[in-house]
Image 1 (cartoon, rainbow, N blue to C red):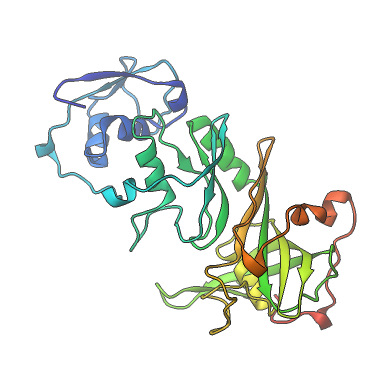
Image 2: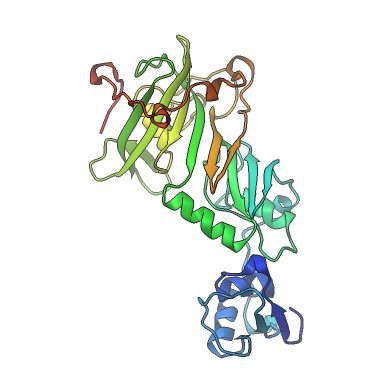
Length: 333
């Protein structure tokens, strides 16, 4: 912020943010959170001339007093993002408007930075919008190896509303997946529920999610068979709950691991292509609906219009058939 006190106005896109988060954005990445909290605690930060708490929310049009930061008062904190990550392009934009930014996330790109990978959608958003009043940020996650629609918000209000919609089940999430083997849990065009309890097992750093755990979290998805051959089947999957690796584990536990799943699929069973054949195809939230064709190619290419040709039966008021236990492979909860 320089060597002088700054009086900064709160823009509409920033309205509703916590004061400490507002300061993190406006003071700059070189100012550690500990310094920001000390400024607030000692009254050096003022909102419209008055003291405020770190978690008070700012409103559009307010003026925030920000003192100068002197690097000698505290060490700087790392951002977890590298210049290499910042230089990489943003994934293709499917839609931008009303505070939402819908991206086409490619397989292999993580949503957030983490151990061993600084490059991420979040890092690329920060690099693409360096001067924005509100840096766009993802409001949900997709597995690193999953492709498809990813929702980011460009305003605090949209971030709050979209996050709430995901948290409270107000988002319709449809995926497409190629799985090993001939799917026999329902006929083509029919929908079958996948119900399990999922829990993480194994030592830290090598954890896997397993189905059939008594102490696990309830998981529900709806599977509609679109096409099947003796070697593989194409499913449309509606994710009702959103647990870690949910679809991958539920399908693998029924003897139908997703093609290309190195973590939950059987060793040595490739599919002639590369990557996980799991794609977030359609999302509906906040009165809007978005679709993105899958990147599958060759024998795995999905004919246009096929995913939408079979509606999930519950949408039409019909029954969702529970599978005959005698025909289901793998473990069940």
